[in-house]
Length: 456
Image (tube, rainbow, N blue to C red; front, side):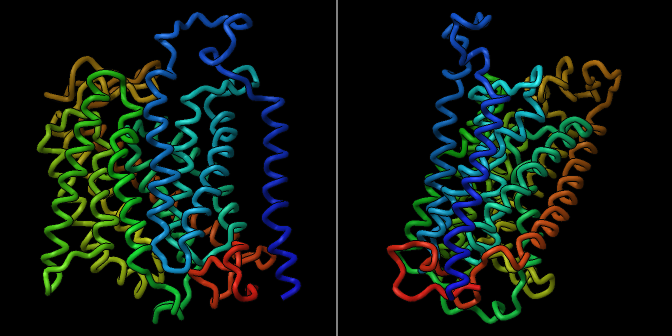
């Protein structure tokens, strides 16, 4: 008991202090404001106030913050004895991941003359990266310590950045809202870690793995926050104007379709016609995941509507059949059902993007991903798509194959990375909760200590 108290007391603060110290040195040596946030008197910037990215991006940035810190945090507080852990540890890893992402992405993408130029776009990109770690952690919610969560972020963020670079540079994926790069990646990375953390005794349930009406209500409130602000998440990276407008419309339609489908199917599957709170907390958001990859395309309102319906159906059936199969056959205990909310809708979204591309429902405004792709009009009649400076050309069929290949690469990289990370998190020297204190945050919060923390 004394040995554990010492480890609990020192491992987290020492880890955070070391991390912050290293980042402070990096920021001193390598990080500065970009031209749009620098002082005009000491900068060569000629950007006018109207042209500054802040005014177009900051409203989206605020919405995404609400999603990450309030929506997702509340959504993860559904367990009776882990409400503070779900909300507070989400807050912890969000900030840790954002800081780490600023450095990793900065050196990978924004390094100019040996220095990182920091602007509002960097913050948005860093939050996109942070979301992957926050989603992945849901697969084993309540079964790891905060130190293990920090190690998860430390490993996952660089792998996410590398994978995103690969599928963008070499497969030229069209994925404006991150269906593949964010949702699919985070899902299968989390499932890889969860596979390593498999505990046979949990197959019979855990006495603390339960919810209450209040905890379910808070989780549902988190879902509503995510639902309201999801259009900002899917549209912030789209080209300003028509494409961004479409992204908002398509996302809202997909979310709305998911919601009504969820109420209908959840009631239908219950013998008494009752609605499952688990379905409401998850499947109502599935359309936002599925439509993200095609959010700025001209997929027609019916296309967005259809994706939302299919995603909700897949999510609900996933909770009904896929989750038990994963736990029983593949020994993957997916605590929050991230495979149902992010994996299955991600697959549907990827297939949808392939169908829409082959149907010619893609225009030039949403093919300028990172300034690399362009063409004159659309993929109708096999219009050729070109890549700046490479001499490469391909048609709709080629782009559809690129979408599929990018999904395959992301699946493999994330799953393998998750398995390796899971092994690292189980190193004996890292503090972790005992089976007795799974799904219980009492050992980690002073106000809640009513019994001695019995961790190993």
